Amino acid sequence: MRAVEEWIGKTDDSPVPPRVRLRVFERFGGRCYLSGRLLRPGDPWEIEHVVALSNGGQHREANLAPVCAAAHKVKTAQDRRVKAKTDRIRKKHIGIRKPSRFPGSRDSKWKKKVSGEVVPR
Image 1 (cartoon, rainbow, N blue to C red):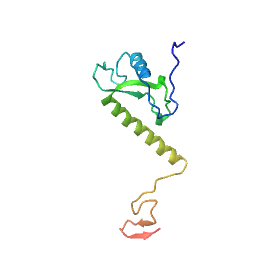
Image 2: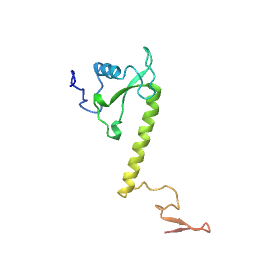
Image 3: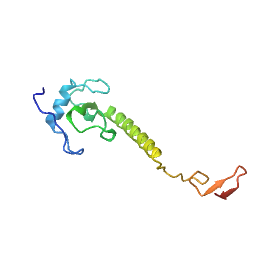
């Protein structure tokens, strides 16, 4: 059982208190959880959600980890790619498509024939 109760953010935007940042840093032994690099005094590091909030993660102490600033940017980009793809798949599954803006595409009222002639659908 934990000696100190786990911190859970009231909202997804609530800042992580310094005492929680310290506990997370010590839980990982002062190492970046992505690169495994030892974080030395003066090194830029951030608190990061292991499972991103946009991908279903929770804003709680158990889902936080220390990470180097450079590695954090890379992981955030990966998280955004994953979220964008899942959104595209879900929208396609329920029949929501982003209409194409190119004439001759499936969503256009114009059709381009093999001869190059453009006619209404």
